[in-house]
Amino acid sequence: MRLVVLAILFASAFAQQMQLVTNYSGTAFFDLWNYKVGNDVTNFWGDPSNQGIVNFTDQAFAQEQNLLFVNSVGNVIMKTDNFTNGASDSTYVRNSVQLLSKDPITPGTLMIMDAVHMPFGCAVWPAVWMNGGPNWPQLGEIDIVENINLATNNAYNLHTEQGCMASNQVEITGTLVSTDCFNVTNHDQGCKVTDSDLSYGSGFASNGGGAFAFLWNDDGMKIWFFPRSTIPADLSTANPNPTNWGTPTAFYPSSTCDTTKFFGPQTLILEINVCGNFAVEKFSDTCSAVAAQCADVVPNPAAFDDAYFEIRYITVFSNSTTAIPITNPSPSTSDSLNPSTAAAQPPSALATSKSTGYSRGTVDPLTVLVGTVGLLLAFASC
View 1 (tube, rainbow, N blue to C red):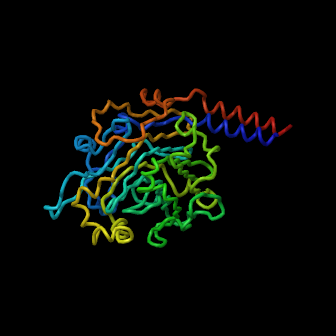
View 2: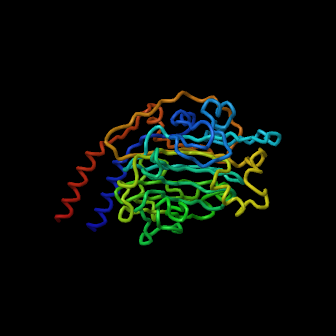
View 3: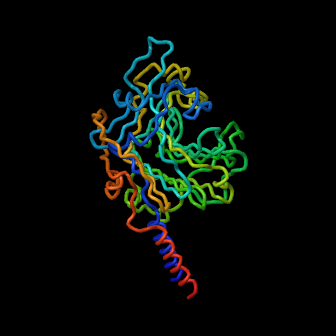
């Protein structure tokens, strides 16, 4: 009985000390990011990038061209140009978008993304990932969503300097493919975990999408994927509690990868690349019947009809005792072009935090923690 009570207290303490930092949803979404502008020769920080056949646009142009908008059910659409025919231009590159968070992701963070659709298709390379900044991979990389072309399952990954390893001794629902996170090992394969066919591509879209959750704490880094019908009831509330979510899809424990050593504050990045070295290298695996090479697909706008994110919300929580101010954006006037079958339902309990531009908590986390420790000590002495 004592153990049950202790477990309940631990779960309650976690739920209460996590506070909303940022709610990315609806018309407030677009102003909360920095935008990579230009080609893919170098990244946002000036380091060598992925050589995509792409032009990343600024926010104003992307909204003007309806590469960024909120659709008729209130979901955020982020897409690649699928209306420009580049067949007559031998130097044509396709417009797309790359968004980088203004606020960092740090230890003590829970990040949740609920999406109805994610990009897929030949020559399409989408990613929801985190980067520690310049001089990659000195401060690490975390891949939450990534694959290419017509691949059918998502891959979770870490890329680091030498010494960070995934463990084959922890329980996960995904499949551990490789354990060495060092970027030099096996051509930067990373410590990869793969997921089911519902986690990516057409399978994800036809199933109504789903939700991803990333938790970074003293235990290490955990990632969950929930297909639409299995999303926990508390995921979209003001008090999501990972202790109730069961076995993670991927888990990188601190015992084999000290995240305080291999990772600095991370920038959350959403992007849709066009070709790029990864998609080019693996093009024939799934797209040989479509074209001889990745570049041949780029001029055809119809090839990018599925190259879009439809996001209901992204929320970031932290156990920091200090509320972090965020930009209070002005409403967007984007019109709907792609109606969705799944209505936007951003956490209603979070709307106040978004509109004021500050995270709020009804209980001070330090007070909760101190009180909980006192209760734990009292029970332990009984």
